[in-house]
Amino acid sequence: MAGPAFRAAAVRVRVPATSANLGPGFDALGLSLGLYDDVVVRVADSGLHIDIAGEGASTLPRDESHLLVRSLRTAFGLLGGQPRGLEVVCANRIPHGRGLGSSSAAICAGIVAARAVTIGGDVRLDDTALLELATEIEGHPDNVAACLLGGFTLAWTDGGAARAIRMNPADSVVPVVFVPENAVLTETARGLLPRTVPHVDAAANAGRSALLVEALTRRPELLLPATEDRLHQEYRAPAMPQSVDLVNRLRADGIPAVISGAGPTVLALAEDSTADKVAQLAGAGWAATRLTIDTTGASVLPLAPAGATSSGDDSPPQ
Image (cartoon, rainbow, N blue to C red):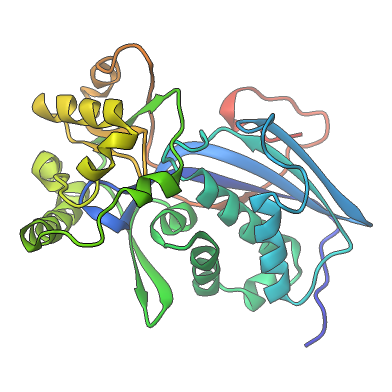
């Protein structure tokens, strides 16, 4: 197969934050959130140049070790070959190390951008292959499925290959995220999980996961029992005691609340009429934000015309 040809123009990719697990759906269920990173990628004559604004601007590497660049390189390898050079501009809004899928966003942005900048890339790397590649890089499919597909996703592996389906959450469900100041490494959170769990707990989570599909798509009044978890949240409490305490306090008030992904962010699935009030319940030390549910997933968007100005989170990186 001949090597790929690349577009001369830059491409802009927008990727959403995600919340995985949603309580009982460990490594399977995910929700796409209306908080976004933007990435612009252009094939250059030589070298690698990276600009980063926002989250991670002072800490992320600006070389080949950057996760987004590694994902670009892996995708280009599957697409047939590497470009001579790359220019990458990142506008990061998803908090890092907080359980909101920042690594999945970087991975998905990289592979979607590589496909978009490659002529015929969507034929060489279709959507199924895109999910499989993102899962291979990330190690599990829950966040990347929600990031790529948008909405509410159920992901699994079949014979080692990642698969996912997308569902539409009920219109009345409003995510509220409580983001703490300090990060927790996913490796730390996963390291606290036991190798085995009681059968009664596994059975309870299986039932709650099934109920959560019904509750989040059609019967939001069932979200409180549907988000009950026995597999991972309490085991992770030593790494994030304030987060688990907040989850328990919110749930005691009848609010469906869970640890978002590996934490330490707390996600509440509120009603539209009460979401603003729920956002005020955490107190000091938390950045509480009412979000929308993203319905599109990773998207290739037009670049702003030269000289155009805009404001807010809709503005692309320049």
